[in-house]
Length: 69
Image (cartoon, rainbow, N blue to C red; front, side, top):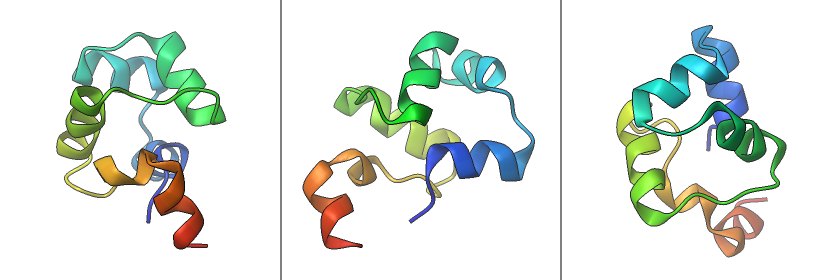
C-alpha cells in the first residue's frame, strides 16, 4: 500500500500542486502526510483517483492500516 508522502516523492509532486489537483488546501495535505489528519470519504476518493489507485481510499482507515502491517 503506497502512502501519500511516498507517492508525492516518487512522482516529484509538491503538496501544493497535489492540493490544487484534488481541491484541498496545502495545509491539509501536509497534515495527511504527517499522519495528523484523516480525509473525508469524498477526499479519500479524490486522492485515490488522482493517484490512479496507488493511494487507496481505504488506506486511510486505521484498522486497515493495522491489518496490513
